[in-house]
Length: 485
Image (tube, rainbow, N blue to C red; front, side, top):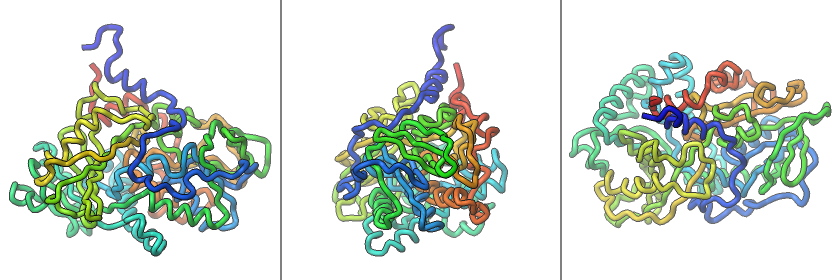
């Protein structure tokens, strides 16, 4: 028990969520995905432009998607993308490469909290991302192939008996409301059956559609095309320090950066875990969580299935995510390990610093191949790095206009411009960001009616009521299952 004046574990963790995340650190760990670097990785103009129709802060999936969709809707507008470090150097260039929704695992809670209609809309939205990425890669032609966007069978192996029994119940409950998906999902248990998947020590696995990619390369192809259009300017190593309102009737916002000030009609925050730095109201409502990634070499007898399969290893506490190189090397891209040592040992919750590794997570990740795969013994970590994810108080993204109560700045006439946000992907950016960016671009351009059928507008919206219900303590109890002592 905590002493009379000693903060409880929950209070200590909550205090970390309430901190200002600041801006991304200058020298992060080196991500495997970002080698080789894009030719435009450090691009910036000789002097920062004085004004732009739209300023997007952040160069990850969300920011790139917003930019692309804005130009598709109005090709003449000028867009400036600000990036604190090199291009696509944040979570998009550091994640696990999964394009994987886990509808059976999430649907029950969504339905219980939000109701059936909202739960179905969010689930459909997430599932739509695989097709969206595949089609976008195809549209890029030969250039798109470098992004390795591919459909795979996703195998979720579960290593805890209680979790396995619960998973089967949740899967069936989800399929009852989504019967059109039943033929694509299957349950497998028993030692002999699991060996067909090369899985050992598990109680069972659930197989269903998923995708995998090399996001840094894929998004690099998209951004390269945008830069070639001449309508998008990329200003890397340009930290956004403050957003202000001015009296201009044409460009009512000013973004003050380390390289000068740029005026804009619209300012769009696509900084995910760092959004609360420029929008302090979000402290404790949107917070960073540092994730650990590795590349691990495997022996020659480990099946080379990277072109057709991905995995999740789900434990009594937490889960890991694994894709595999589709090449002959068969390297595993393995991340996760969060809280395997317990919350009292945690060093990642509320931590925005990806210049350091997570010792707790690495200790676990190094053991996963030999614990989970029949041919995993002897796997060796060849590369390791961290990345920063953004989590919200209720587990859903924030995609909306930024109100005055959030920014402390008077809102301008919507006919002139606005301040916007697309952030808080809760570790599932690959099944949230791309279409959220598309939707937000439509909303910014006054064409919201074109996306309401498929975009969870209300569920992802930034109403005062929704945000006021968020607290660090509530998020921790939901996220970690902690009870204050």
